[in-house]
Length: 193
Image (tube, rainbow, N blue to C red; front, side, top):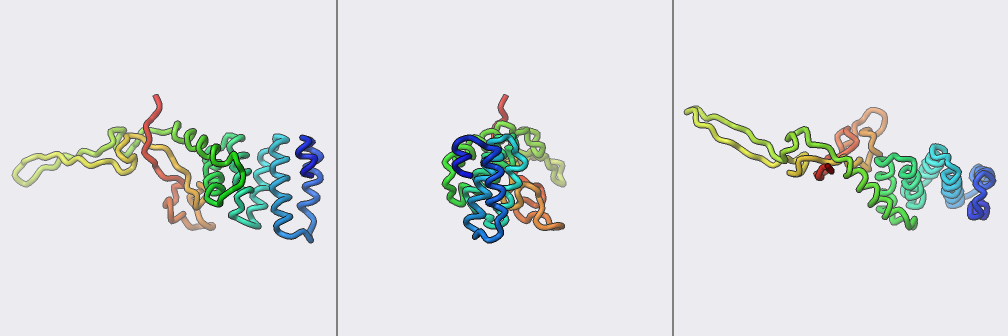
């Protein structure tokens, strides 16, 4: 299968690798390798959804496999899903992946998400909150506080939550305890004009 993949005979490689992956007596390491190679072949053949499903199948055997995560992240990136690409690539880099393109792709994906920054709705793009208070004698004073949502920048990008894969959920009914069910964190950034 790997020879066919190197020779760019993707459909033939897919057929051989599907068979290799399905053999019940193969050990976990061999099944992981088969999932990785099959996912790559499917991606090269333009079958992104199938490739991602195969990478996920492999991750069910080893959720921290850097190669699977890296290749899945590259597949998400090539299919245009920047949030999922960010999550898979971030996990791959944290796992110490050997996929050489993963770090660069993570940087590119992060930049892409940051380019989509939006004006902070909490402070209306000012980067701070101004409150006027009046004491019992009628004297007014203004209190100015930095906006914590956008980190004083007036806008933010949505950094996907790696813990819940951006879904906002853990398990069937529980909200993610890291992002509080949003699926992302606001990160201060300048809006590109």
